[in-house]
Image 1 (cartoon, rainbow, N blue to C red):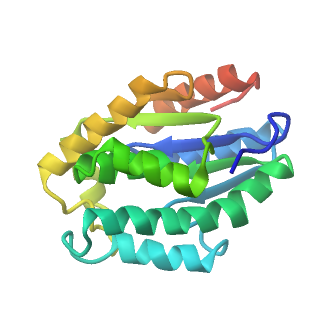
Image 2: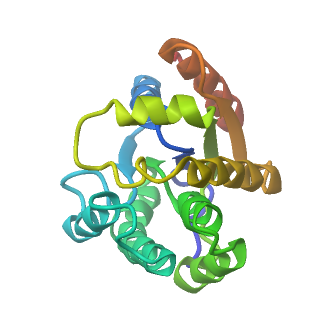
Image 3: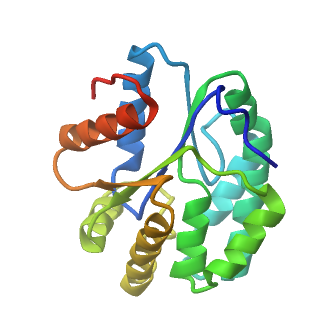
Length: 222
């Protein structure tokens, strides 16, 4: 599978550990792009934005709810790529082909970080799975949010709701997760841009607006 021609939409992903503020900042960027006259679709993984893809969201529930030890790491990786294939073919690529920008809260880098590094499956396993399912499909830009693990977990666990399976995994897992995201960013500096996720919401939004504006040649107000 290959991405749409470069003169069509843009695919931007938001990545990072728990509690780094991705969901807040994806809404801020979507609003800034819309104000600049750009047609934007906001979605998420696992699953998809509510109302977009029921079958992928069923898999999301299996992954993010319940006890930490529910799944084997290999099963988690396979479930992630099952929902991702549906998401890509039914939502992401069709939107890009119409010229829309797609902002996605998590994508393939999360599987590499969570299962490849956090659960120690290894990068090779996840890379082979990605190539088998999605081939060369990659985002145009990945914003890699970075925050000390303890701060992110405190934020994440303060949220109410049932989707806390990963937040309740041990601190060693989350430290490996952060190392994994950093390794991904270091290996692909042209695609990945590190975002310091400390500071106020407005400060982080300004950093993102600057990064995205510079990368794609658009003027954005954060």
